[in-house]
Image (cartoon, rainbow, N blue to C red; front, side, top):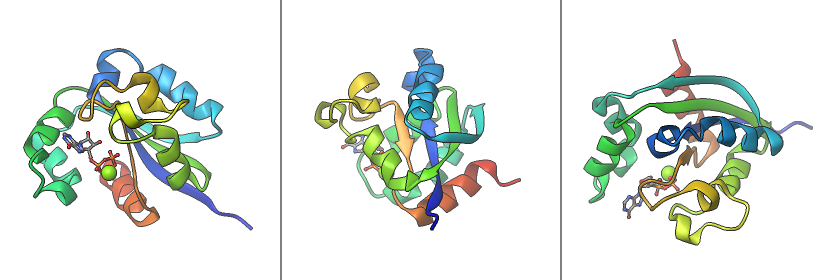
Length: 136
Ligand code: IDP
Ligand code: MG
């Protein structure tokens, strides 16, 4: 039986700015994730607003979209068994202060907003987010 899944990961501007993208990609590979596709881009603010639309009523929405579009990011399709949940666990808690040992956010996250990585939170959202970056 196969539950190989794909999920969408983003290395956020704070991490790309510190040249951590290769190190983070190595962390994923060492954890058994295959990087199926990747691209380094800078998002327009309007794209960030669409990507984070689920958060549009939150007080931090505008800052979040400004931040995500503030510099280059690396968007990746990751593949592994149970990759959606596996990636969420490997990223660690949203606030790096609460992130567990061995997680990416524990190692590299600076603050709740500059937390180095994004990961899809459900199989359904993974499909939507993969299409957002890679459908063409
Ligand atoms: P997640 O990235 O762990 O899935 P979400 O709740 O989906 O967390 O929030 C999306 C992003 O919005 C977070 O990664 C973080 O950068 C930012 N964010 C979440 N909560 C706050 C907050 O309370 N203040 C500022 N930024 C926040
Ligand atoms: Mg989220």
